[in-house]
Figure 1 (cartoon, one colour):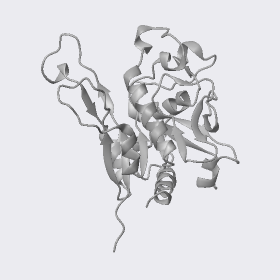
Figure 2 (cartoon, one colour; figure 1 turned 30 degrees about the horizontal axis):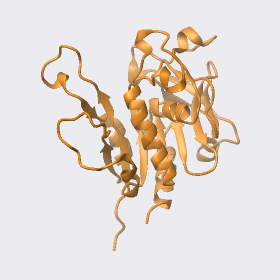
Figure 3 (spheres, helix red, strand yellow; figure 1 turned 30 degrees about the vertical axis):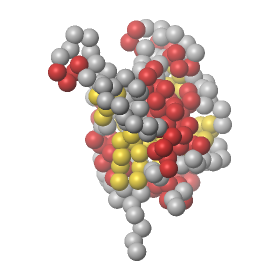
Figure 4 (cartoon, helix red, strand yellow; figure 1 turned 180 degrees about the vertical axis):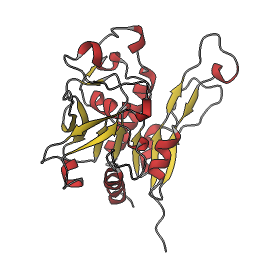
Amino acid sequence: MSKRPLRIGLSARIYHPQPGATGIQSKSLQYLEQSVAHWVMSREVMVFMIPSVSGDGMVHRSSIRLSDYPQYLDGLVLQGGADISPQSYGEEPGHPDWAGDRLRDAYEMELLHEFMEAGKPVLGICRGLQLINVAMGGTLYQDIESQYETPAVHQHADYDRHAHQIAWDADSGLARLYPDRSAGGVISIHHQAIRALGRGLKVEARSQADGLIEAIRLEGRPYVLGLQWHPEFHPPGSPDLLDCTPILDEFLAAARGRRW
């Protein structure tokens, strides 16, 4: 009998109703960005978006809880999106544009802790890295350009075509995945970044230009890895960008190790 494919959960992006809007924009929307789902699915994996379970809907959603999902899924990917709310790490927003999405923070932190409690692997992308850090007690620069002393360009009008270099140390997990190199180009789109590192986390990579943290890993078990960049935006075979297939394969190998 053939083994069933891996089942990976993907956290939802959340679109909140806009004041005065009509039609679909007057509704709460939960969605995923297509390319991140397709990147995970490139390894014959089934992807399931995990909706939040807030109780403000018109229809009763029975008794399903976020804690039920790790029983049926093999791993979790925290996708990118809105800023982390500074209130989630004990600060007030320095500017209204940096207020973030505290409701999504709470939903994804609960998801993260439930999967960690179940020993299931977690991969965080962009916002996902920041969420992991804050959930483990860390803090963020609310705005790199105004709060970091010598910032490089991390957010650009070119969006998913803007790349920069990262580097990692010889004793990092990335060095094991890429034994013949110590740096690579990545697509990185963010105006917030890790400030104080969370408990139990180790820095995996930094931006070559300004030293900002670009990847983190939880020491010990379970498998938790956060990437500040977007591997799903790296075209296959690109000579200028890091091939992130080894990272995906490592995450999925951890998921296979926790299957029943």
